[in-house]
Image (cartoon, rainbow, N blue to C red; front, side, top):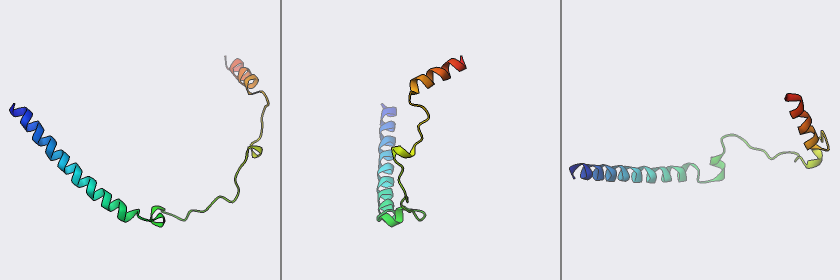
Length: 75
């Protein structure tokens, strides 16, 4: 019974510490990352061009045939 009481008190103490730490972290995060400008470390730019499916070269039309060839050459 004494061990259970001790465990309960330790868990309550740990829970109280976690609540205090959570509150301090929330206020710190709100202060540090409150706006979008403070969330970036360096200058970010938008990509000049976006790739599309046509930009990716097609090696083979039949990928399963290529797969079978690769497996056959390995084993």
